[in-house]
Length: 247
Image 1 (spheres, rainbow, N blue to C red):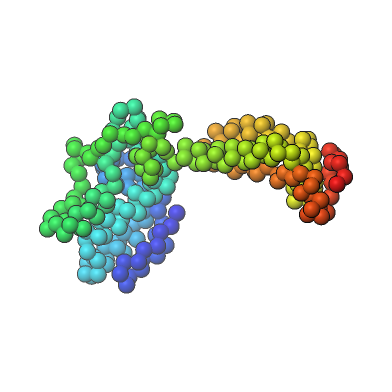
Image 2 (image 1 turned 90 degrees about the vertical axis):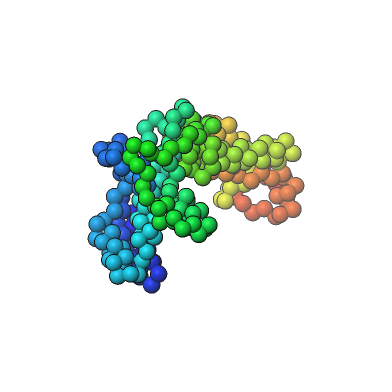
């Protein structure tokens, strides 16, 4: 993963960062700090510090920038957790990214704004009650919508699209639309080459679970009645498998 920064008139381009896994041997002494679990190339950090030494960049902003890169890197690798082992079931997550806290301090022009970037003492880590996902009970604190994690959000959306499409199909059949038209062929609605919609939905549910909510539902074909196709002057070739009635 690479990051490009523009700090005033001074770009720092192509910074190499990497997010590790929380199961790795990350030092517990700094677990309370943002970006815990991320790696960033030393030369890029030195380039940012050089801007501070030259007076082009405020030290507080430099710290926020590096912390922000680290936190985004960590969340990209593990968007469902805060890095604290067992952070659900009533336990506590690490504190929210301190940049949010600092932004509010600076907005009010507090005189002690610089103090807001001081790290929390290691023996007093900032924590908050974990908000488990309502669907899977995993941590949802850093996913944007507290109460549902990103994976379950993707699963809900994909499942809703599939059920909406299946409802459209069933409504068409109930209205007497018994011809299914794909891009190349005209079929009977129950043509074996199209597959059973209920079976397709079951396969889709299994795919959602296997791929952590990341699956695309292939829309069912459009349904038409014979009268609709006649009015349209349909020229689509008929399927040789199901042999729909000629129009």
